[in-house]
Length: 237
Image (cartoon, rainbow, N blue to C red; front, top):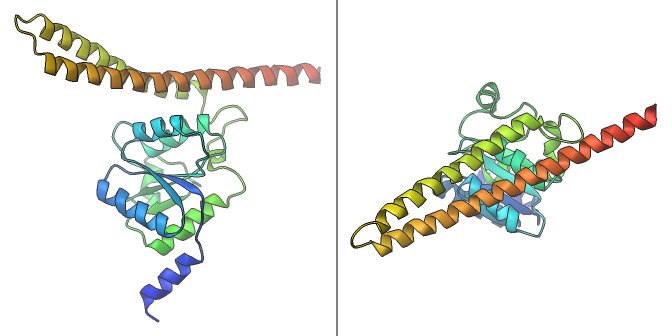
């Protein structure tokens, strides 16, 4: 039996059926990762950008068992994405992947020590083993980041991240609105270009709505945690 056959047999013993959300901004790697995971029996959802992953998770009613995300991506890194998704899905488990080594990633402060990580490029055997390790962990990987039983990060850190993400679509809305207004002031308005700009505004409004919903959930979780601590302190007196 060849070495490749041995690898395939080992991977076959680590098959699964859970739903995996795969996030990778390089299309070729995204496609390869999807094929690997599907060959192992998993249901695979894909996103090429963090904001696509957030929108997908917002709309999906069924459970996502594992987030497998690249670390370095435009606008939002993998750890921030994992934190954001965990706000709405507290039981979510996740692991990270990168072309950099785990040591380098950890030293940069992008991913905390102790989280599951796989270095690219990886074999199907390595991927199968790591995915099973993540899924069979007794607690969600979010526990690695948990500061207390209310939030994954201090509220001020979460608020800062959310405000940053909200500012991007709001800036886009204002800029496009001004551009549309200027086009309509022309003696012969460019209606097609105006329609394109309005379509961009609609997309930015949707993105802003997603962030606002997440801010609402953070506030609810923080309020609930404060009330719980107040009740516990009262009971101890």
